[in-house]
Amino acid sequence: MVIPVRKIFWILFSISLLLAAAGMWVRLAPPVSPSGFRYDALISALDMENEANLPNWFSTVLLFGIGLAGWLIYRLRAGAKWQFFWLVFAGIFLLLSLEEAARLREVLYHTFFFKSIATVYIPAGLALLALFGGYFLIIEKQNRPLQRWILGGLLLFVLGGLGGVLYSDIVVLKEWLELLGEILVLCGCLREINALAGRD
Image 1: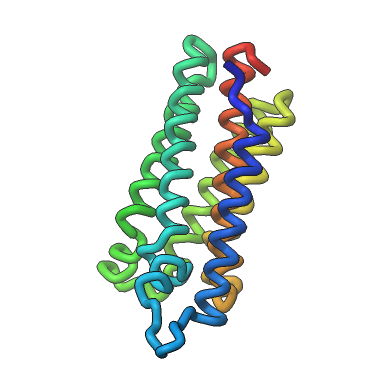
Image 2 (image 1 turned 180 degrees about the vertical axis):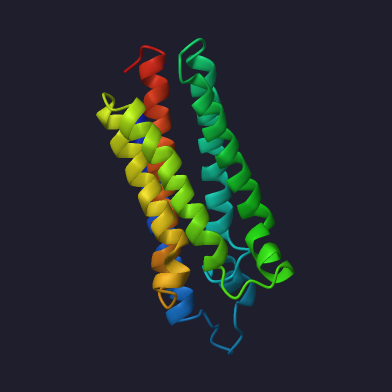
């Protein structure tokens, strides 16, 4: 069975747009009942500035999906020269999903008294781009579709992660860029699974 990558992309993309629109709605015009009651639980669930929300849950699921897809690529490339890269790739994204779920960056930020979260994000984001960029531009240089999906997604993901430093006033844009990047990386992995299984 062929994984319908484009259909999955458009479904996930639509969900990310709905979450971004809902985030804008609760920030610009929080829902209030005619009697003046504020729907704080709904606002909290959709506000992208809040860490425990639906967009972060969606992001956690996407990151976990990327980790699982990376592991499956590792298994499908059994005996290949660079097979180990995909195990590292899977491990990094599984850790990122756990980090997103546990909000580890906030714990580290407050535990080590960093002056800015950028102290963690900038080096980590650049290292991620260097590691994956090197692999996809040098080792996978013949596989242009895989490069476009994954490197494009990683670039958006890192731009979203660095957004707190670059454009902190536009929280919804920052979070949506991260989601879009995750969706592109996941779809790139699914496309590669199709190719490796001879279904492309």
